[in-house]
Length: 466
Image (cartoon, rainbow, N blue to C red; front, side, top):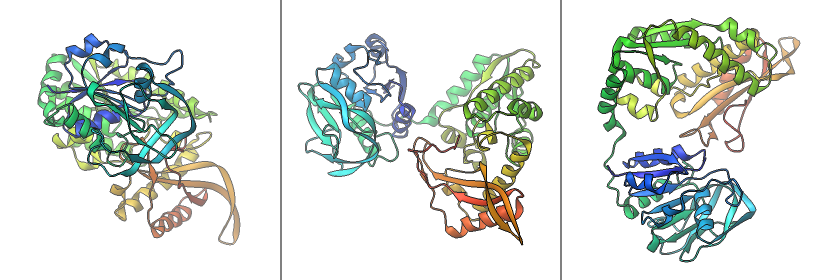
């Protein structure tokens, strides 16, 4: 099978590179950065991509590949850290950048680039680096640059070596897919015939064979990843699949009921709902630090899940989430309402109640969140937003309600557009819709007298507040 290998140097975008290539019909796999040249040759790849990463190439513990990969005669593409690594290992010079680049930048292309062929002379790219290539290795030609960084792309076609300082895999890079297509097709010779759906029949047969009559357990959250994985396994093993849904008490209105309706009634799963809401709230009492919240919730979840899993006789396999759930889910005929739901964090509403978590503050947030989601859906905006939620802030403000002054909570609305969650921009929803949401929340939810809208992109912010 034609394939491209991605060597992972720790970039948060490594999985995005794989997804972009697979969307182009190119099969690829991700390997550790230290994979040997011998192991790589066994897989007979058409090309190799060196991912980005958080390190500096001149650090003592900087991750380095097997140097032999540069002499295999297989086309190589270095991305960000991958470019710096290629330059450093082949005799160029890498130094701290005079001005770091994070976010959008304007790339200017020089003539004669094979990797950047067919692209405009200038376009926006996504940058995330503090180092830069100061001197190119012998045999390389400079093919693009930005206002701040001269070496934005370099090539040595004779050696089949290519590199870019920006991230073509990130959605905000214009023509990023075309750049990867140029590498995969024009440089590596891949014919774009692979499809993610094509693996499904073989995967189902393998699941059935691997489990071989044993019982299978799944921690089902109701999110897209675990839902698609559970439906796949259920298709293969039927009633031997046992799904456990842990009600942490940190859910939104209707989440528990939806689990019963979709997975128990419609799909006919063996579904156990473990109500541990009191336990989670007791463990979270007095905890306000976000990281401590996550740890408390994670440990409690494992405790409850293991307790329930031990009740299942002959349970020998555990189901985990899957990549490309939207693509696979449609081939399994999973309802769009499940596939296209907005992401919901594992710690639930605990990280949307800033500060200490109490039953009362959770109820305020649930009520407000329910109103916001209902209005967004009614206005036809749900499918146009990647993620929408409310955040209850740990501050109170003075207000006037009726003829009395109030001193109540501030609630923030967060709506963002994104493709993959790696980068995001705030959604420009109509002011009339924002006004309606705000008016309903303040009128119907006791404890809130001020609603604000978060207009910060990612980066510099994250999508969630905690």
